[in-house]
Image (cartoon, rainbow, N blue to C red; front, side, top):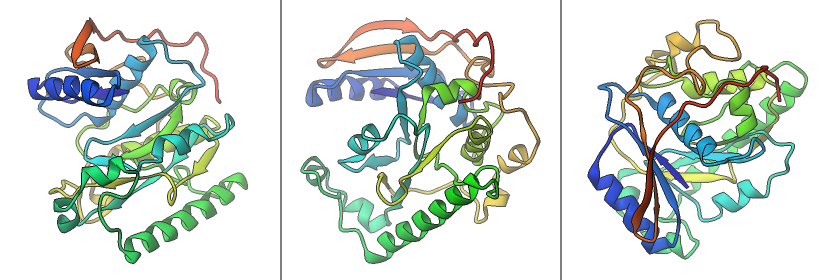
Length: 275
């Protein structure tokens, strides 16, 4: 598991260390000082760079989950069971209410159950979005779908490392909020990505908190950037990052840090191919 942060905070490092002991799980933490702006695309790319530095294979299907989301107990198993032909996973989340977030019960998650009671309306909303995304995947096979649909949700999706490499990862020209996931899916489909729609089945629970999201998608800060034409292989990305302080990579196991290194920028491929 890799945790990639947009800030350096000793409390996060302590939490990661304690989790490795509690859950018998090795965790790699990638962090660097905050840059006084949200750089979500860069943080995701830093996680990919760390995976590559630690020996990830191009065929690996890498799952991305935002820090305010808790995966369902079968999340990893369902992604791992997907066939090799799938290069992009369009999943989704259940938006917890303030009351559900307050009642969130970690113990029942460990018992392979939802953290709170999920309403019929919440499940119906997932079903509706799942059907819409399935239809978009069908129309994409006939070249009739919009360029970025069926869209991924940045809070919960998965992509083959080979696909991320083919498009230079996330576009780090996206700063602040919104549309970086739409941009990634658009370029991924340009590269030949084959999607799997798991909106209803591969879910995370999004805990309620105040949001920077505007009322309308078109009003998000990143939409202007999304509407600018650009190449499939973005200019600022996995192999060509936006300037940042060199991130630190710490590998934790058994309750402590076993080694510490700096994050390297990977060498770009000799030729740019589609997947």
